[in-house]
Length: 337
Ligand code: PEP
Ligand code: MN
View 1 (cartoon, rainbow, N blue to C red):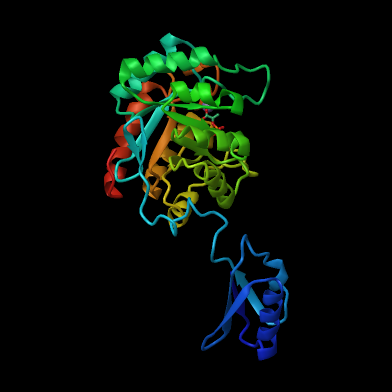
View 2 (cartoon, rainbow, N blue to C red):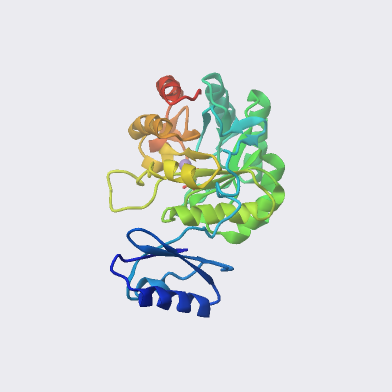
């Protein structure tokens, strides 16, 4: 924590801050400057409460310089992390494209879509066997049968599988079948689930909660990593705002913000981020342009028959067009697809 004093602050104001900091058990280091004095605080175990200093006479600003998260931070690990999902690298110079249906509906549906996206250049297959649905009456997923179908689709295409784990009780089962455990937006702060996923050692695709700040997202990743599992991929999937022209507001500004603070790869999900297929292509282009390490898109060969998220699913020909459109953008930003 750094306390920046006002230009008009007196020596007494500075002393007051030092005394209060020391009373709270911190070490205060006044750093006099040409214009103003700043006071560095160290020796804190956890985060320092800025409220104790913000309103003292002569204090202009309280700036956090150390973060509550450690393992996710660039300070801890300056190089970009590259996470291997079943041998496919996520992070680094190559853009990773995750594609597949929202939900596993049948073997025929999943294998058909998996073959189509593989043929068109996808790197990983997505598809939910356990679906977090807003309504309890909506299709909830095929459960374990869905996991077996995903394994069949992997067998048929060679694509490693990313699939959602909804609760602690099914972590082991999902980890047995999947190459990457997806923790969905609604579970981003399910701390027990995060810990259990951390214990499996499997890569975790951690989706941003729909009202989560960047710091909350990074702390959620920290839960997984604190269990000894460093294989975390972050995912922006849109947040809830007042805008109603789109299912969620895709916050692409989080991509460079993450890159500054963390070594973890971050991908973007423009399907859930927008909810409408006509928006998926332009926001996929934008995701690559802004520096995302990959995208996750929903693809269905018969979107009008899809049991979930049909309106945002691309058909295979649309996915082919998406791949063609993102390639030159990747090259323009020094990446490949
Ligand atoms: C999904 O990717 O299948 C999903 C349910 O997404 P989210 O958790 O972002 O809503
Ligand atoms: Mn979906």
